[in-house]
Image (cartoon, rainbow over all chains, first blue to last red; front, side, top):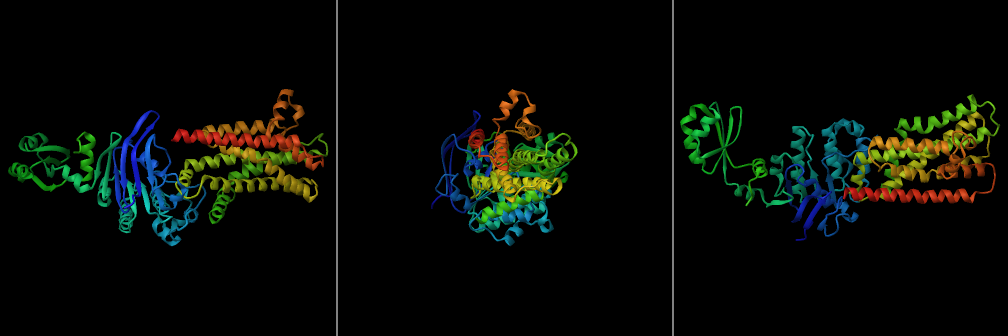
Length: 297
Length: 246
């Protein structure tokens, strides 16, 4: 199968600071890539490299088999950046029509209006729209050319809960229609729901590249969480098979390799313990653990 | 072509129709100055002053739009990430600049046309139609090198710096090239500098046509030289900017 993206031994330095070091990966059609990593680790730089907005210090990148700056491929690529774009003194509907005119096979105006979901504000000046409305409009503009490859850089930043839910529903349906999507987000639970593959950036390179469930398998420790009015020191003494991960008000989170043993240790205190939950680690918890220094195997 | 028409239409709306600052700075100020100096402060002026000052204020109007309007609007497009969106879309920056240039040229035609309308209908200046058209077209064409410099300015730093630089360019250009008051009133060294400026070349060409003198090849050469200089500056500034971003 021909790769949509091929990145070979790419390094990027910016003002003598290493941002990416010898990064290589391929993206196949239909993959939904969750690109994760701490702030400043190089996620946005990698996206800029893939879009041809900046050049690698060394290495090679091809998108649809050609150089990322090639205008011929731009008809098939959509981008939603983390900072919304707009134009002064232009209304939402005018901007939609303008951007649609850039593409050879644009989505219909009706479809674009549905994606932007601006309601009565469709004819409002873009500069007067709220942050969340501008994000939704930018998503519609990213979709204007009905792209095969879609970049979503922190797409839900600034959206309210309902808008975020609706947004990810739309991304899910795009994924089902076979589009290739590369998404970064600070809301890792959202990426977890949609991504078929995780690229985890740390210290200028990928420390993990694979499916989320494979990543979870590498982190075999189980989470046991519960509410209790017992003190932190009492619980740590009584639960030697667990390691306290976090404690907020009455809510405790322990990590353990043996959940049966930990529950056995906890059972004498059941009168003062409630809402016990045993779960596998989420992407968010793995992320926090890895960024604190735990190595992925 | 469909893309170009859409871009021109949208740029016309946002740069002219929905831009009240355009009327205040680019149209009202030169027209107001023209009325002030020809109707109110006109003591001791020769009869031909109404005509020569019309040409000066028409060129002054083109400086205002070519530097202030151009630099601020291109800078706003950069700040609002419109340029970046163009870079990741199928259209080129060349297409963007062509559509902007078309609308900005239209804008200079409107400004010069309004100053001419004030001259004809309020001040009473009389020319044959061909002369009115010659002023309109030549003053607007003469603004192209300055317009390119205005684009280059938009890539030269922050909003405050660009704002300061636009005013540092507009007023010396207007004063030194003799648009506000006669060049002969300035020191010799200032006259030497003024005679090198692009606005002076435009002024010479338009005045020669209005006064039915032979076409000035020196001024035309000066205009072409400024066009080349402006293009070199624009390309250099954009290259530096791209290297900084890469």
